[in-house]
Amino acid sequence: MNTEEASRRVSLARSETVADGAGRLWAIVLAGGDGVRLGPLTQRVCGDDRPKQYAALIDARSLLRQSLDRVALAIPDNRVTVVTHQEHDRYLAAALAGCHRPRVLAQPQDRGTAAGVLFPAHWISWQDPGATVAVFPSDHFILEEAAFMAHVQAVAAFVGQHPEWVVLLGTRATEAETEYGWIEPAEPIAESAGGSVWRVGRFWEKPSKETARACLARGYLWNTFVLIAKAATLIEAGKQFLPDLTDRLSRIKPFAGTDEERWAIHQAYLLAPSANFSRAILEPCPPFLAVSPLPALTWSDWGTPDRVIESLRAAGVSPAWLRRGA
Image (cartoon, rainbow, N blue to C red; front, side, top):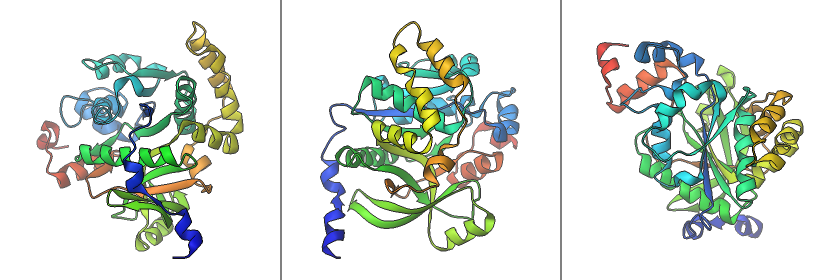
């Protein structure tokens, strides 16, 4: 290892000794999508066409509630934001029943995952300018939840000391999946017994089958779309890659916490461009992009009925609807 490389390498173990700052690790839980591809299964299980995050597919809890319970292992409710769509109000109350209500940011229109991530990043930065944020989709299946959240905390501690990085959580790929993002880890930035952080060499969002096969052969990682970064760093990324969207969202700030906040959000979204976060920000593979491989645990993105059924059977989990035959 040369001197330059050695100077760039940081001990994650040292980062892990730092708690989440002065209580400044926040969660963004993404719950604004309609889950169209999972529609046939949610219709069968729930009897209606509700978005998948409001469906109870394992036990009595919806996928959103399971996600919130998982996040609560590491992040208190008063630092959790749930990003939804206004049309989801009829499902939201049931999903949040019996738990301390997190902050809900209801989007008036669907402007894609970029707005879904950047809007709450802006909102959190107005409450806590030094905040670290962890972004969680609400449609993941994870068995070893404590180990998963411990890894999130370790990466958040690293980001707290090195705020220039946006760190994705990657997981080992098992097939040439074309519906996931793929990550090429380059050189290590930080490592310890608790995990490692690598600079991203290249990122592909939903590649062709040929590219996915090549990525699998090289041992590249799937993107879980769980990411940890400083809110300010995400906002700067938005300014660089999506300046029009970032400008619209920034106009909400003077009205935040006032009676006009809802109106300001509506105005911001009215002319805001739609954008996919992975394609607009991750796929250009900016120099601040890093990845931390998850430890060995059970993870699946529940995007399709087949994926739900396959992952449940592999994990030996058999809810009543699956026993009856899906």
